[in-house]
Amino acid sequence: MFDAQCDLAALVYEQYQDPDAVSHEFDADLNARGVRVVGMVQAGQCADSSLSAVLLHSGETLLLAQDFDPAAQGCRLDLARLQNAGVRIAEALAHGADLVIINRFGKRERDGKGLFHLIGRALDADIPVVIAVGNDHFADWIRFAGGMSVKLGCDRDALDAWWHSISTSNAEPEPASHPTVCEILK
Image (tube, rainbow, N blue to C red):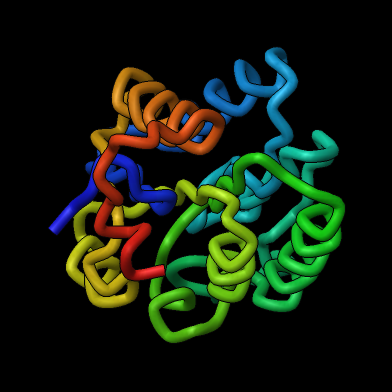
């Protein structure tokens, strides 16, 4: 079951789509309106040495790729660098945020590693989270989230509509409204 006002959203993308561009543009627009966004958006490609991420709260770009090894196959993500980025995001989150953006849900998060801990920390603090989830990982995401997530298409309209629904509901709760599924299960 999906709840349009749930504070946890999956920006579900196909291989040909660019969730990083959508997330980065969304972050820039929110920052321009004074919304405190914490998290990171991927830059570069996983399979080469350009893999990096932009820390949204500072604008700093961090290299996430392993040092170049011509024999390496597949994703060249350096887990120590990812964990360092996670520590920096957690520090920024401790100073307050209105939204957390996580660049990807992948096998590391599925296994309780990667940036997994940031999702729980944000939700425990009632801070909404949006995370890019590849369509090929969506079944894992549903298990991870226990079905308690909004499924968004990989476009700004969907992201903006979700943000509007939760930021409006968080700012001015309607006394006669019914609680959402996510609110009941919190």
